Image 1 (spheres, rainbow, N blue to C red):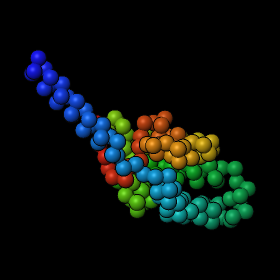
Image 2: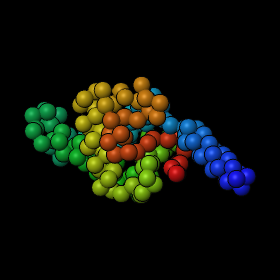
Image 3: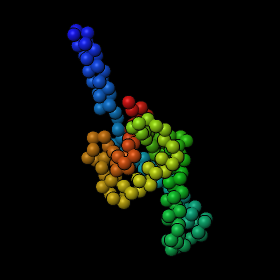
Image 4: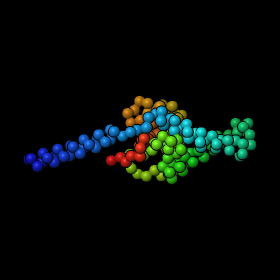
Length: 160
């Protein structure tokens, strides 16, 4: 009986240590995520828009009248973000604030998974509430993070 009690006590201690580890994850705040997104917009999306507007289409009026221009710009932006996340693990904005996107099950972030996350990010942005969810949640997850079981952390973390 004494041996069994010691084993149970060890298990409880190890579970307690693991739960405090999980509670102490340093999730990125809504504002840090927002600032990283602004940096990505200025460093990736705006130069892309400029190139498409003045080099490919030829004028701002032509871009505004184009039905495919904005769609292509968002598609190329999503591809660039997915490529950066798949190869480097971060976009320039996330790197500026040392933010990492990790999956709860520790599987690798593939190009197509990140591309799916980007398009779900667009859906979250359309719903507005999906983007504002980190303001109310303890784990700071947006709608696209909840759907794909990802987390944005201040350090690169490994979930157990």
